Length: 376
Image (cartoon, rainbow, N blue to C red; front, side):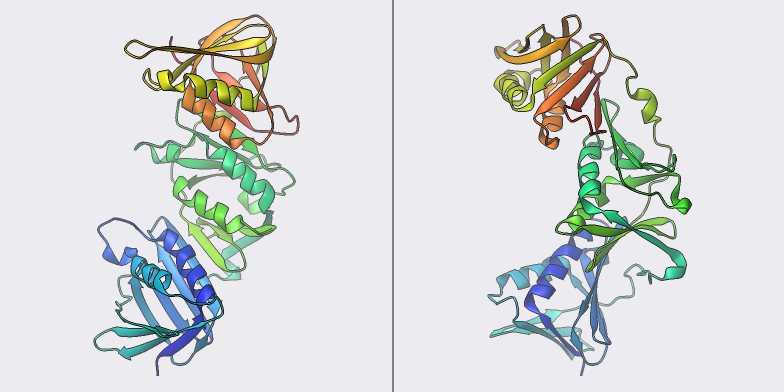
């Protein structure tokens, strides 16, 4: 009898996590499905959109092996409709193989589900030591770095390289992560990490994979990370994520980072956030342009829109250097404020038409955020 059982919470966690990798639209219908395989006391769940693949292997009670696909949205909706305790058992039974009918039972809830075949589902790699190079990465440092490095990923349609994060392992010492959309650039470093000898080069990881990698890191001290053939593999105790790498050449970001500055501004993060918020109703009607008129003890933030009017706010600050007026995209600055945890921001400037370098007041931080100025 083709039948298997699994705890409700274990099943729900696996389905919800792996479903994040399925395609939400596209020409290949099977990519909106989960592949479920039950055999030898384990159940494997797989979802993929052919850019990333999520795999989960769970302990379960299995009888004869069974292999099928099912729409991810359907199984999620079914599980969310069931009122059950976390330890309650969900039972799957293939009741009509020829017609593709699977019965799902939990408590007094029962569903007859139309399952589908596996022939068109992409091949699932078998992870083995001979073609996998994995090492431990500390989640705290990597999670912070991924959050910082995601800041300048291109959000619109465009060059796939700019819709990605550069993992620069080329110097062999400390990994650098960077992204750019041509209007801004961010770069950060992962400390206390030994780069394996076989990985000392530059990799370009699609933005699609980054949120799922961050979720794998939640509530974990370390994560397995490395190469599987020509793809990146991230793994915790329950889940594996395999992502393709983007082909192309990442811009030489180190050349964009300002080497010298003539003006240094220190400002409180919350005060700057509040100041920008005050002028935003006008700024959003003028391409998000906010003027920074920087003097010895304060920054005057102001925005002007022909049909809406003018807004001004003042933020206390410290300036080392000559006064300067410069304009930035308000959203870009707010994005930076929302990512950092430190209470002080340092802005390094040169002239009104030269990029501004935003950093935190924490001297141990290697996070650098470069923003092109806007024309006033």
